[in-house]
Length: 439
Image 1 (cartoon, one colour):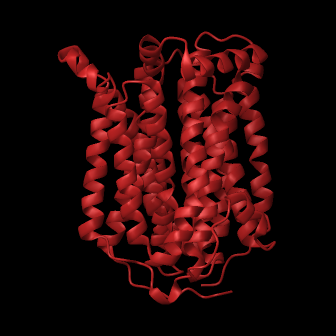
Image 2 (cartoon, helix red, strand yellow; image 1 turned 180 degrees about the horizontal axis):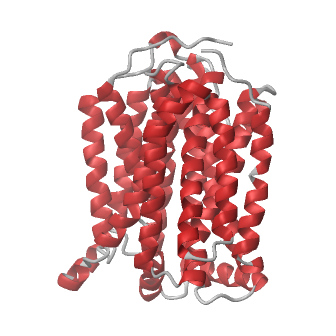
Image 3 (cartoon, one colour; image 1 turned 135 degrees about the horizontal axis):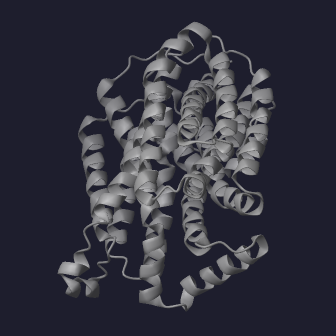
């Protein structure tokens, strides 16, 4: 095994990495509370013809296979858009990661953050559904830079502190998912067309305020990286320029059988299960406890706070004592318990107990498995290996929404959460076979 050299942690670079991840996740989740209104708006603008009409016809056909639901169009519409973004991340994460192994992290981050900002600029002027889809396609492709940011964390942390560095990534994830929907909800309160209807001629739409907020944050991120981010990849660890960039699944299957590939599959299965829970949680809370969109916000804030506390405080203390592998296994079992408690919760109090277990379990799993993949990989392969790792997570987030919704409608919440809990025993068994890397 190649031993990565220990580099001093660069606070300014870590700050830029944190901001890049946070804003990418903010952009991914800011649109969550807007899905129903997006559908209504573009139906009024575009009608039932064109691409939107075709998409709704496919949604109607899919819903007929699983039975009717009061708001199935809005939910599946949101699921498809979320899946689209996730699939683009899946395709591009190894591309940006491998490229950063050759030319450095800073240059790739500058390009991808600029591309993300451009996607938000398009969103501001998306007067048609087609242009809105183009904006999401561009945004999803450039958001694959999460692999670059994660690799940069690996560059500036020692092997002993790798899990602590990956916990920083987890905190950025938690904050992005916590504040993204909140920012989207707040931005939706101001519709520029209500005050300046003539702006519709240039593509301004009711959701342009959210786009402006995301665009402004991306510009801040771009400026911050330009002036504060110092290159983290040592030139001696850069791979050859003639290395081909492969499709993530091809790259995964091409890996030698061993701990890296097992950790990648473990992460994919865990993310598939956890993302399905996140997307279906709103249905469970609304159906069983009468939650409204406003009270749904409390659930995700609670989950975000638990994730942040776990990854920002607990992980930093338990990993040096017990090791990444044991913390990973404990997190998987905690998540299984959380799935079962949440799925069968008879009261709101029990619901929050389940959410506490889910948040704590995920907070233990994500930085631990990220650190293991990084520690199993050589210093010159951090970008490519973490690119494959992150792209599989994106693929899971792309598959999870529709899969979870279909199972939920077919068999109900308790069945879905019990099945998901049993499903999570698979990565636990895989984790038992992972070695604790030497440091």
